[in-house]
Image (cartoon, rainbow, N blue to C red; front, top):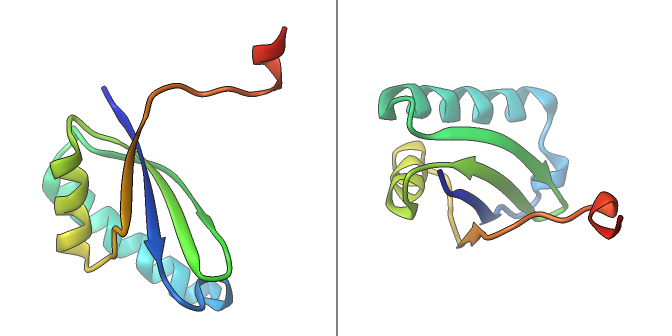
Length: 90
């Protein structure tokens, strides 16, 4: 199943409290449960003004629907074609 990288513009994201991040995570999980098992949240990375999320889903429309229902921005959505790391050089 395809894997997607979502770039979310969230000014001040790096200053969100643990409680705020917990609330955002809970909302995301609620929406995921309603959408069904085809879509999975892998992980997210929080920077100063953005959040980068990795999702597995059958298509980008489902990822965008998750964002819409959750009230999350999805400013850029890219399908991950492959992954590399230091072991790739071996």
